[in-house]
Length: 330
Image (tube, rainbow, N blue to C red):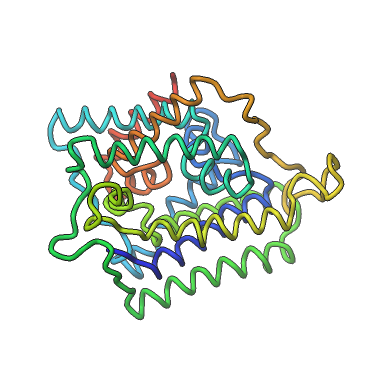
C-alpha cells in the first residue's frame, strides 16, 4: 500500500545517513562495497557502518515492530535454496562488477551528478523494471487483494512520533552535535560511522526499501496499475533531492576555485570520493549493472535491505550471503 508519510520520513533518514557520511567522514555510502569489505578487508571504514545498519533493527523491533517488513518464507526445499543462492550470487557479482547498487549509484551517485552513476542507474532500473513485469508473466509482483496498491495508508500516532523523533534526532546529530562536539580523529570517525549506519538502516526499514513486496509493486505501473505502489518515488524527492542540495552547497572535495581542495571533512583527514568517469565504463560494468537489475526486479532486494533481512530471517540470510560473497569473488 502507498505509504507517503512512512516513505518520506524514511527517505529523510537515508539522506541524513548518506550525506552525513560524505560531509563528516568524506566517504560515499556504497553498501555493496562496505558489505564485501567487511568480509574480505574489514576496517574501521566499513565494519562500524554495517554494525550500525544491523543495529537499526533493535529500536524498531522494541518500539514499533509494525515497521518491520513481513518477508516471504525462507528457502524450504533444495530448489528454493538453489534459487536463493543464485540470486545472491548475481547480486554479489552484479554489484561488484557494476561498481555499486541503489545506495552508491542511485542515492549517492545521482546526488553528486555523476554521469557514470546515471548510466548505471538507468541500466539496472530498466533491467529491474522489465524483469519484474515480464519474468513469470509478472506473477512475482504481489497484489494487495481487493484494494489497489496505490491506496494510501497512514501511520498510527505512536509510529508517527517515533519516525519524526528519529528524523529530528538524526538532524540534530549531523548538523549540530558532530560539527560542534566531535573533533577530527579516528575515534570520532568510527563513532560517526556507526551512527550513519544506524540512520541509514532505520531509513531503509521505515521507507519501505527493505520490503521486497513494496519494491516489486513499485515496478508494477508498466503492466498492472492496480498493483502499483508509488511510495518509493518519494525517495527521489526526500532522499536524492536533499542530498543533491547538500552536495551543491558544500562542494565536498573542491572549492569554488576549480581544482583546489576545499576544507577537510569534519572528522577525516581527506576526502575519499570515487574518481572513475564515463570513460571507465566497459562491458563488465554494464553486465554487472544488468545482473544487479535482474535480481532487484526478480526478488525486490538489494545489498542494504539484504543485510537487514539476513538478520531477521537467518536461514534466508545464510543462503543469500553465501551466494553474495561467492559472486564477489568473480
